[in-house]
Length: 186
Image (tube, rainbow, N blue to C red; front, side, top):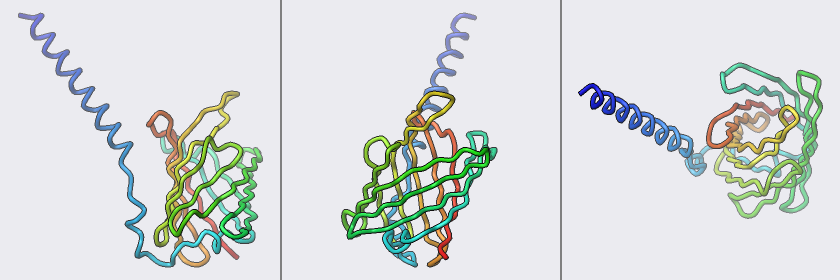
């Protein structure tokens, strides 16, 4: 009889654990469709906003929610037809300097693709109204190793000068951090 009670408890514990894992996995897959921002203004035109020099200020929060690093990024951006180049130069609060050069291609009114040296494959972007959602995998150096982490990156044009950017960073479907960034045009 004691064995049966123990087995029942173990079975309930396993069922609860499996339910929690499934719920977390499904929550990780949930995402807002960028089309919900179709009527928001001002309309985000990447070629118009990312043109010239911009400065951004941001921070990285780790999984615990603690701010781990802050940064300033200067972006020199230019477009030729439907292809843009964004030359990003990061200065991190711990003294690290980093550079990423994006090549962004406008496919149609709402679709963009992007590449950079540390982006694995091709970034995919959808823009509607004042919002852009980028998804991509970044090869991120961590303690002498390289992690491939996924970015779910959202940009929101607040007005003609200011854009806010938030990104959830995950590995194997588990959130490992968040980036928050603000851009300002002169």
